Image (tube, rainbow, N blue to C red; front, side, top):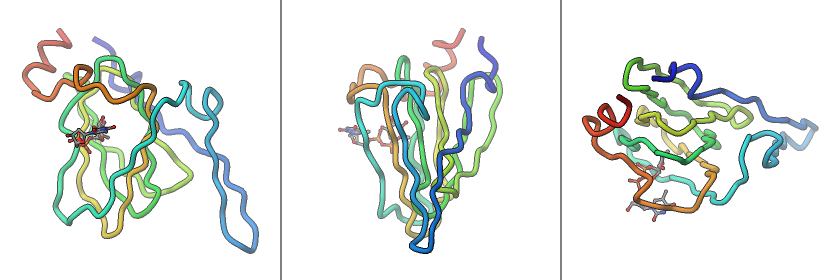
Length: 136
Ligand code: T46
């Protein structure tokens, strides 16, 4: 079984600052180590909501707190860690085979996700016991 630390990485993005504010950018295969096939975002998230609660078999994803902040709980099936995202110029790379839960959303938070493939429900493992079996 892979070590949890091998399955995720925080990546700092470029930040161009001038008197008008900040600008960050992301280029595929440069700042994220995959071809970007899909972009989605979650927003208007009510206080106390919990998202995620699944793993992916093949999908790579890159999560950014474009607005506000939230916790991402990462679980390899053996170890569990919480990563707090609150900076639009830092993204969280999540490799396949990692269970994730997202909670503790601040008011007005927006989760921007870049994904290595189009949406495919067959790539999800949405039951934690099945995830544990998958990781054996
Ligand atoms: C993940 C976390 C971080 C689509 O039709 N297309 C899409 O591209 C996505 C992402 C979802 N959907 C549908 C599937 C469900 O019927 O939208 C509905 C809500 O999806 P879900 O409950 O999976 O949303 P989250 O926020 O719990 O999870 C999402 C991603 O699905 C997942 O890959 O890692 O964000």
